[in-house]
Amino acid sequence: MNSMYFTEEHQAFRKSFQDFLQKEVVPHIDKWEKTGTVERFIWKKFGEMGYFGLNVSEENGGLGLDIFYTVIFLEELQKVNSGGFAAAMWAHAYLAMTHLEKEGSEAIKKNYLTASIEGEKTGCLCISEPIGGSDVAAMRTTAVKKGDTYVINGSKTFITNGVYSDYLIVTAKTNLAARNKGISIFIMDRNTPGISATKLDKLGWRASDTAEIAFDNVVIPAENLMGDEGKGFQYIMNHFALERLVMGINAHARSEYALDYAMQYMSERHAFGKSIDQFQALRHKIADLASEVEMCKEFNYSVAKRLNEGQYIVKEASMSKLVSTKIADNVIYECLQFLGGYGYMEDYPMARLLRDSRLGPIGGGTSEILREIIAKMIIDKKEYKPAK
Image 1 (cartoon, rainbow, N blue to C red):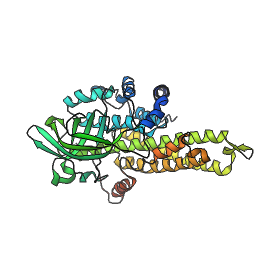
Image 2 (cartoon, rainbow, N blue to C red):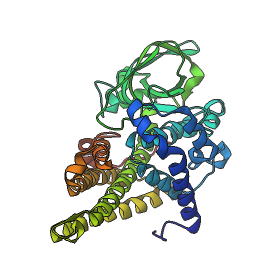
Image 3 (cartoon, one colour):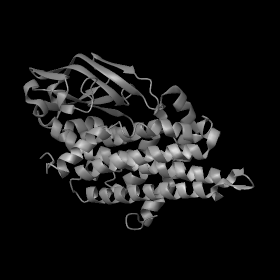
Image 4 (cartoon, rainbow, N blue to C red):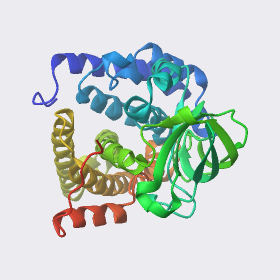
């Protein structure tokens, strides 16, 4: 492994996490893929091992570890061959919990963050809407203040952990006329009256529960506002960089997994008197694919290091997700081809990998949106700044 970024302690963590996944997760993956439900016991086991607290500061009850423990966490999750299970875990830890820690009041942290670290409560982040999609500023969900409460109306869609989570981090307009300056963020319990969730049937990520969520006159206490009213868009933008880097790291990790599996298969599969990894056309294709994945991985590691140092990496994280997810789709497509007819069979991992990987260029900001963000920064010299 790359000693520029990973210490012996990192490698020991990787090995222990690999062992944990093989023992506690892998035996259940096929069942969860079929049922579309990750059973609750595994959340508690992740919590007991401290895996949900890697990126949380010690003062907030986490381990306060550097970013490369998170990198390892993400990489190894991709190697259980269930994008849905991996998404359920990292969406809780790096979407919902990030907002909890960064914008939650002390009371909110006390009620939700500790339980989230321990795996007792699970969360989801609700931003995308049926009409707005990637246009966050166009959201129609509203939060109207009435006395010491807010009344929430509207809907969200494509929400990971949207059916079975215990709490929801929800974005809503507190000022309809102010576009992105009128967005605020709230937390609410799943059992709050007026919340309903419809489970969506997906092409991939089938182990995770993805939902369309409706809010019908949902009344929550005013203290459930997270951060300052009207600053929700800035908070979202702050954390989108992390989400996009997460998805870039996921992409290079599943690419590596696909290549490793394909090369093992090719070394064992014989045709015309020799293993198929000895045919030049296939060898050179592997060389091309491996080179692209290595370039992505090295870039992603360098961006992670900059994030760890406190730099604002919105451009680089957008590039990470844009390029890494595109390359992952191509790598897995080609790896499926290496397996021939077996690649098309559900008994082999490539079919699921192909389906799961296709979400990469869509979720967390489509590739089209990312290209425009990057173009604005490069061509128009636009500068994005973190919320204060």
